[in-house]
Image 1 (cartoon, helix red, strand yellow):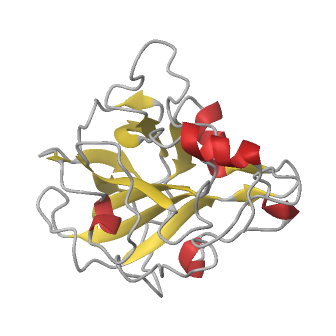
Image 2 (cartoon, rainbow, N blue to C red; image 1 turned 60 degrees about the horizontal axis):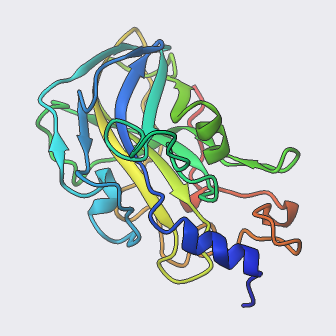
Length: 247
């Protein structure tokens, strides 16, 4: 595959322009850095979708706190270039390099105790996504950058009360044209949901297992004929072809 010089330069310049999901917001209120999170200790991505790191990222910080939320609350997941946000004043790659185009997704897994349950062997369902807008040519990551690093979505009102792990993922596709080139950034929040919902998912997926390395949404060249990361104007489906739940 032939890449434009501009595209190739963007790959090189953005090689270390990574990010970390490091704080949860509930109805706009920050819960504190790394509070209620299972987060990595560095900002390097996961590239092997068969690794257990694809669940909640590499082993790093694990909080002993569980964040209290209500079904229907507005949830925010704050991503920054490094822990604390900027790596240095006016960091152009905070929250992530603008070249790192790709989708955003949010998942839940019901657990007995969000603070102590193992991340392995869980059943996940998708509650929200922002992929690619064919009209504006904007990706989910563009939305995250525009919001200063915060991924915003509503926790569905139908979600049953109880403990969950909340997995929020940013996927960067700027170098996904090559094997293991897609970059996955995620952490898992430990939440306790209150409410009167009774939703039970009819189908769930496992991590690892939901994604395949040769998935056309993972092994993909998002650069169109113009050299822009516009997917040639075509619609894009997030990896795994997993629908968002309908309450």
